Image (cartoon, rainbow over all chains, first blue to last red; front, side, top):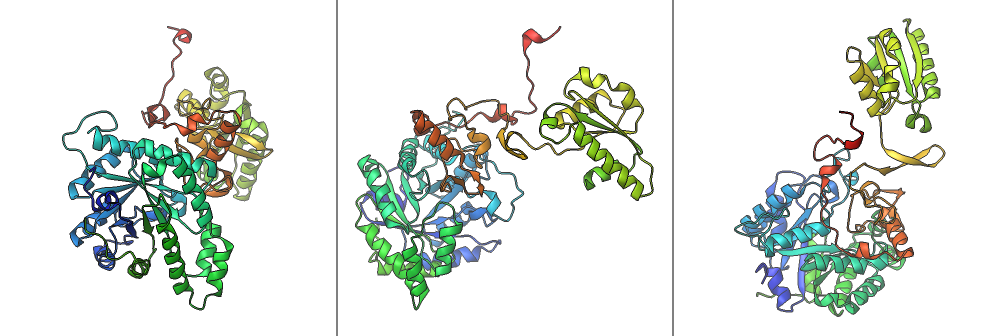
Length: 305
Length: 215
């Protein structure tokens, strides 16, 4: 075992894993995190804590992860390279590990242009690929990026993102292979709406033997309305929403319930795909729907391993 | 223009100093622009009921001492020098005439070439560690919004950068070029963290060509 994290144990045991996501508040109110934790408890194997997503300042991901630990859900602390250089990242990783965080998700981070501080200076000292390698070297070689050694290493289960819907499509599987070579243990994908394109990507990954080398959790983002679906299609770079799905949302009597239904159908499909090891449900500011989605997808009870 | 007027508010005799090299080609600070700005300053002074003496002059290069030395008499005859060179020129003029206020007329933005007449794109950040021979002649440090070294982020779509549809995804261009020339290997291999000390993170940079140094 690399980290002894619950998520790692569930995946090692060959169970179909369930993770979800908690967005910390835009304030110092830790109770928001506690409340969201209460909703997800016993319905997921671990919950991601976003790291200032869309470059909007929020309660820190590691601090929120620490609250999750107190509340009894295993956190996956997201870590972007947008706001920290290699010194700050390694320091934060040591701190997170000391607090008991065992899963970290390595990300580039949304550009600050999208956030509430567009005039800020970004960092990008290293990229997400190099972050993966850095954490692996810290864990396995007990070495900092500079080569210095440490006594007690952070025992981490290292995650990263993959986006089968971004371009150039032909490079996306190579990029996955690069992340595996860099040392990633698990992947959470971008939200899947175009299931055909996802399958094409997965098939390529399978034929390269990559699905044997890394755990892949398919991303699912429940839609709230046809408007939201259109927004994602047109405004969120690197996402694909087929028109048929937008029409389905448009014609639904209860669009919110339809969105949940689509999410459940997607999970059912993912469960049957060889090379998919779990699901990552991102119900953005809609965490209260996660228990229903997990239950209706037949993923309860969560295994205790 | 307001910034310039604010800088010059206290001064009457102004030397408006153009530069005949890069900023001339970029239509930002050559003889023509010196003439335009001088006219604007005179009109403004008249509107305010003030007198302004604007001396217009453009030298070949403000980044070389030999050229800057030649304007000694002109500089002595004014209260302030408003340099229309890039930040390098402004600094050299200020260094050579320390008793005189020297102000920048331009906000120096970047190194780039004109994509078409009147539109410039940034191409080089002078990072001191060039990868253009590997990256298909496209600089990922400058032209990727996140300066990534291991391929495109998840926001690359239809060849566009996630931050602006008007900006090409540098990594899409790199991918296409390397593919065309059979050199995709570089992109498929892991690229380690960079040494940014050559890019300005190591403090102000200096460059020495020893054989050219005279004593």
